[in-house]
Amino acid sequence: MIDRNTARRCRAPQAWPSVLVIFGAGLLLASPAMPLAAATTQAPAAPAAPAAPAAPAAAGDTGAVDASTPTSLIQSTASAMLKELDAHRAEYRKDPSKVHALVDQILLPHFDTEYAARLVLARSWNTASPEQRKRFVDAFYKSLLDNYGDALVGFTADRLRVFPYNGDPNAQFASVRTQVRKSDGSQVAVNYSLRHTDQGWKAWDVVIEGISYVKSFRDDFGAQIEQQGLDSVIKRLESGETPTAIKAATG
Image (cartoon, rainbow, N blue to C red; front, side, top):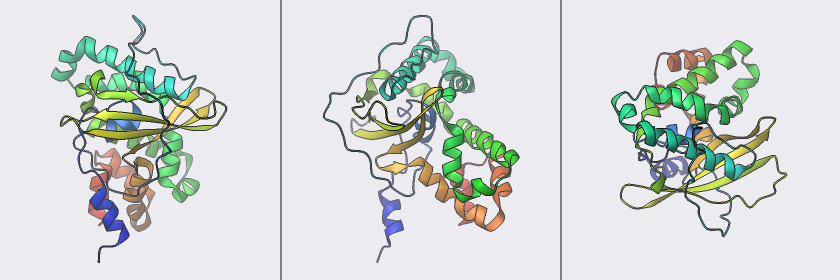
């Protein structure tokens, strides 16, 4: 008999096209090399509203991101990325490492890396020192960017649809639904979990077809931390290992 965890992993997507590059973790976690094989979450109910294509960014401003509402954050971030990618796509294809600077400029300020890392580490966050917390946040983000960030080069507007957020505008937390068309024409549901901060709305989780990256990585790191401690995970991330490789080595 197949247990529940095995069944989850069988349902989990093992490879994603590079078109899932809206921003933050979404673009990094949905690259072709990134397997998401962990716990599922229930996606929020879909509002009955038409999807909207990503709108162009304001002329001359590649970083024109509007974080005033959940929908505008996703929409304007995607637009800003598209503007820059379309203008210099050949250059980015020739030297994908330049994509990293683009991510730092446009995406990173609008993804709540510390909040996401706190949830990924769960109880280990409470016992970690300030230095360990900072090292984990920096190493985790760098690991994702180094291993999956090059997928951004393939991002095109015709593959992305952003659905309007119809929830409470005064809520602290929100979920924005998007839909991405894969190369074979099929559609993939990608939901972004956001929270309102002093700097406006920020994303902290990406849920791809019901699979949460926060919960996935919490499982990936959990056994390693339990067996060898948080410093071991941090050092392996700093050395360039992917979260999936860390989990596989732990067994």
